[in-house]
Length: 111
Image (tube, rainbow, N blue to C red; front, side, top):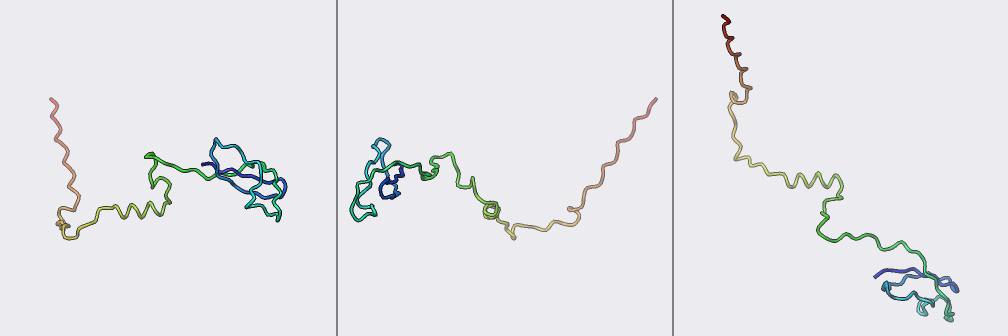
């Protein structure tokens, strides 16, 4: 339900009312909220108010779409595959060296 803002022209009271879109606007200041000792039945005028904000619903948005950079970095660390030290084996030094450069092919004799 939308929230409408009102202001009483007699006592100056500003208040908000939750009303259906189809409901007619209020015309009189509410008796229980009026600051006057004797309720004066002041006329109220609808005001422009900011609204309740934007709410996204549905499957089109992800919870990580608008996260901070620090959160994204820590999430990457949490989802990184865990290293198993027992599975790691040491490779011999000969295997870690770069392979020797290939010899060029012999040139064909021109006759």
